[in-house]
Image (cartoon, rainbow, N blue to C red; front, side):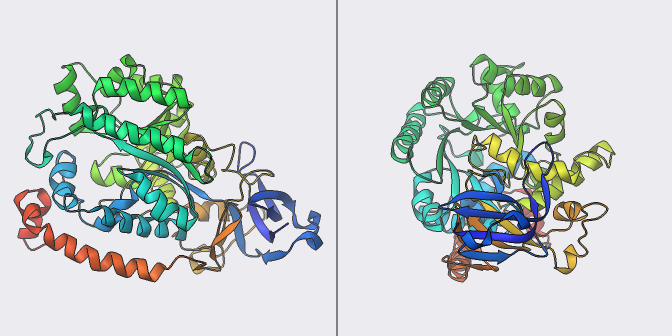
Length: 475
């Protein structure tokens, strides 16, 4: 065995609960987990590198099931505005100035932040995603479910009214679809890389292109990663394009898009019957609580989908708006918001929420045969969380494990001090092994100052709510 973590509090996530093992050990060799159990049962003589996990929780790495890390370079640039103008009038005027190198820089920062807080798998969603695979995910040795955005909108949306239907260009969609198919060929047997199909949303892709996406994804047995029913802007667009009674779920159902291939992100603009239909037909759901509460003022329907028997993961979405790529924060946020919404402190308890941030996210992405539990034969994607920090103290094992609640409600994410992906240390004892964190932070800071400055005129011309706040001297 290459490495073993011993004397630790193991959360294996095996079984229906958390699969806790007191005074546990996990060992791995050649990137795979080779032992899970009591420390006393491990033959330490066969282990080359032993880590004392005392005062730590050792658990599977977290899964960020939906994210746009490239936009991290615009952190703090679009929030506290009406949902109807967030994309077009708040984020758009600045985002239009992004260059390819900016998205790479932003992704480096977002991935570094995610790794720092225990994320080992990213459900990345962007245009030209091959650039991020080559420049970020592979050099950093990070697992990615990579989705190339398929979007046919050709209009400058900044000047479009909320009821003006976007003009679509099918040629643009075909180009992106071709990129996805090329990615499947190139990365079919590549470790740590899974390719998904990414029609951005029903209002941004024509039915003809959706048919092609479905056919291609089915042929390659790939998941379709799609924003679904994400708010008023999409609702108005769908009604304008398909008619007064149309909704996203109704149209997707008519197009044959709803089945166990579909990863439906957001879904907060759905009826109870539509949620039930999505679950019954096998679609998975991803909730992004920090993002959607900030942008839409809505609690993602995570609890509703779970109550209907659905498979649900969590994502950080993008940094402009919610702020961070931190799955511990997402777990805490969805737990608190859901308890508040239902006025019921018993919903989404920590033993369920921890699964959402790891194993259930792996199921959503179709990766649960590889990751999501500490189990012999699975990939050694493992993190340790230091329980001796002031905000995590005390931690007790009897009469119950209080640190389970503390992981969800007290963790900032930066108590994570070891991050291992496929048996390789990415962070060891709180320090990156190969990634130059400081250099990336400095590069992003320098570039962002110029980027925001260059976007000033477009941003002010947008007349967004945030611009009016700025003119009052409040920002």
